[in-house]
Amino acid sequence: MLAVDVRRVAAPERERAGRVTLDFQDAYDRSRDQAPFSNGTEGYGWMASWCDVCLRDAPFRNMGKGSGCPLLQVALMGRTPAEWIDGPRDEHGAYSIEGQYTCVQFKGPGSGGCGEPRPKPEPPGMDGAVRPA
Figure 1 (cartoon, one colour):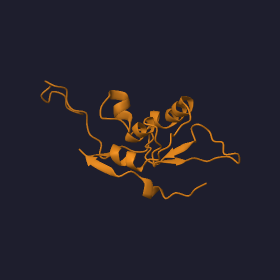
Figure 2 (cartoon, rainbow, N blue to C red; figure 1 turned 180 degrees about the horizontal axis):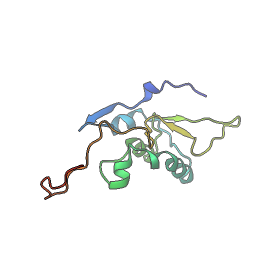
Figure 3 (cartoon, rainbow, N blue to C red; figure 1 turned 30 degrees about the vertical axis):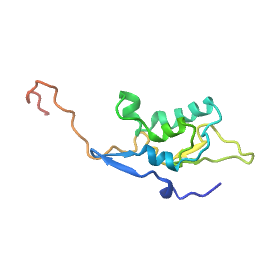
């Protein structure tokens, strides 16, 4: 298996409103001109194990906010993101669908939040009527 320094392929990140975001154009420029999956079953199987639980894409996936994960967008354009490192293969070169790649930008549930916790805003028109105990 090819040894890769993950720090060298990690996407440049931009700071926007206190949140770290990935840049689509940078991800596209670094990607390999090769389809990441040979068919839809491979693609959907891998995405179900990685993208569907990744916190980086959660705002878009759950609420339609933001533009979604640029790495996934690059993959859907038929290119393999540099941030997707080839996973382990057996002696015949076979791999499991969920282990085909390891995404170095993956942020799984329970891996921490995005900085300091923020309280939920007060509902409109309450004017301080609700106070925490």
